[in-house]
Length: 121
Image (cartoon, rainbow, N blue to C red):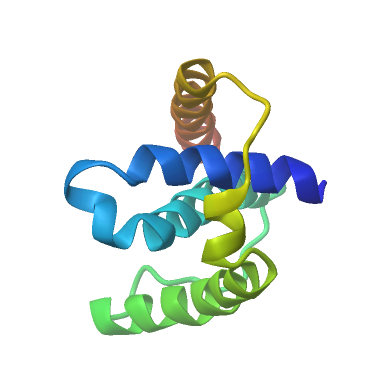
């Protein structure tokens, strides 16, 4: 599983290491992976009718703080487990263009499933 995530991170790093995101490529890579992971977790939670915190009547600041508290530990764990130098050096054995296309198709598919799950509940 570690090699799988390292391949994903290496290819996403190559993608973000161009243009305007070149200076923050590593952070964008980790954030992009976490967004997809959280989207999938939230889809499963909605399907299972699991409500950890009900945030509808809370202020925007409170929602940001809750998101940060949930997001930060996982982000920092990924950052420690997969350092930037290790991701830069890793050479994935996957086709770059095909993988990026499949990854973004997976993101779109995950988002559609999330919307369907929310509408059905």
